[in-house]
Image 1 (cartoon, rainbow, N blue to C red):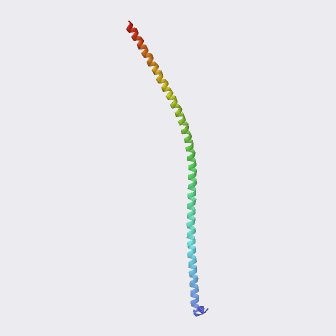
Image 2 (tube, helix red, strand yellow):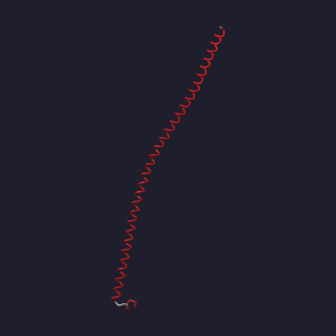
Image 3 (cartoon, rainbow, N blue to C red):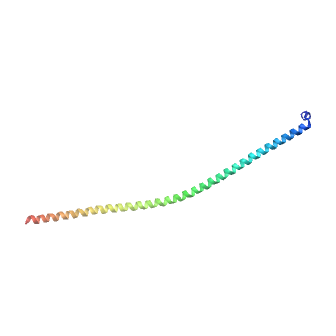
Length: 122
């Protein structure tokens, strides 16, 4: 251990003090970095919590919207079925109406022919 004996005691005390101060300074820097990291992690945790809350809100809104869409789809199906029935009814009325007008036209033409026969025979 000749290394320690060659250094004067005051120098040895100064080096030990300097090494202790450096170690203390490194420890303080490390603690400051750790505190900064803890603060950043806390901020990150807050951000994740906000995103989780937004995700839950979006989920609930989506469920509500899907329910509304399901009801709308059922209403559209009911309305479509009603329109199809009314279309069939309208087609039937149109056909029967056309038939009625054809009979009326035939009756009028017959009446005209009878009148012409009566007038022609006189």
